[in-house]
Length: 177
Image 1 (tube, rainbow, N blue to C red):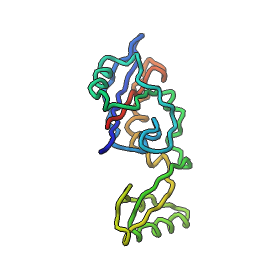
Image 2 (image 1 turned 180 degrees about the vertical axis):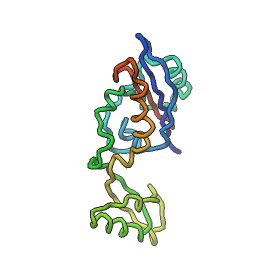
Image 3 (image 1 turned 60 degrees about the vertical axis):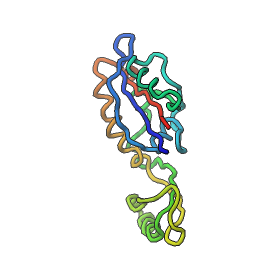
């Protein structure tokens, strides 16, 4: 069974939060771990729970998930901007099972000083034939693992911040089973 994230953008207009719609961030467990410590290591932000002042639309969407919805939180644009999303030196731990011939190719690129992270894929969280595959651990730049979020969310949110502050734009999110 997989875990998905449901993420909405809200903007504060006057004293009320208004939904600006849902944003699809795909099933990225590294992002889930980074934002809220769900499905992995590497949590960066403390989970805050569902915001009491959420817009009516976001409340209704959340209620539809009932007890299947979990690990609710929200982050303002200002909080998200504390992260250097383009930092290639911040590494995140990864692990998996991959074909035996694949790992040495990756190690060669690391030794040459030009890691080819594409060689790490495909890999599996579990399974694999013990005769032809083996378990490995590695690190990969956060920039690569969270690039989709950076492109879809972090480069978009500031465009909504017209006549407001970064504290008046936020994402509200939760996970489901």
